[in-house]
Length: 210
Image 1 (cartoon, rainbow, N blue to C red):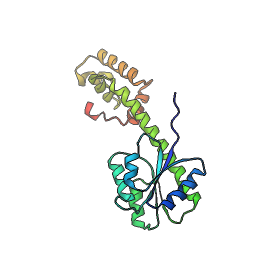
Image 2 (cartoon, helix red, strand yellow):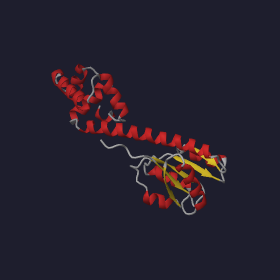
Image 3 (cartoon, one colour):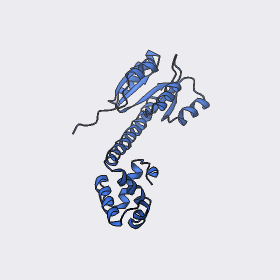
Image 4 (cartoon, rainbow, N blue to C red):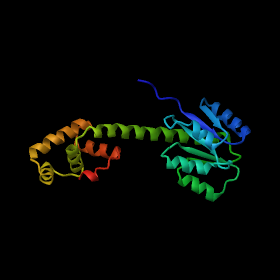
């Protein structure tokens, strides 16, 4: 089994001296970096499958940091962002944090503050990727269910008994027991409680199957 790739800290800042200084600090603790002079260059090169975080300048020409954050959000890209700025204000900070920024560092900031923010951002990225991996695995199991098995799954997870499910679906109780067994097998659940947890962890919308 291949190991997950090491995370990369992506630095986007239009000032080359800032990019060099940030790279030096980040690489001093053994982290990989990639730098970009603007948001569009980052967008053109970035692959969401790559783990990491984004250190992003607020004020940049053409596409600024907040606009890039909003664009990534609309595209469903969940890379954790640390904003850096020399022009910070409360309103900008609040807006950035509401959209999910990990931190907001106002220049001049210490190397330690930056590295601690990066540590938090990389931990969040790892957590997000773990959640997505679990959801994807559960979704693959769910795809193996037949339409009738999905109906049974939905009713079982809201606490319906086999007899009630049989009456609701117009089937025999024996048939429902068979469907229920197949649901448990295909979802790889050992108990009803585990089946409910899988539905929750997978973010499955079962309401349409009830």
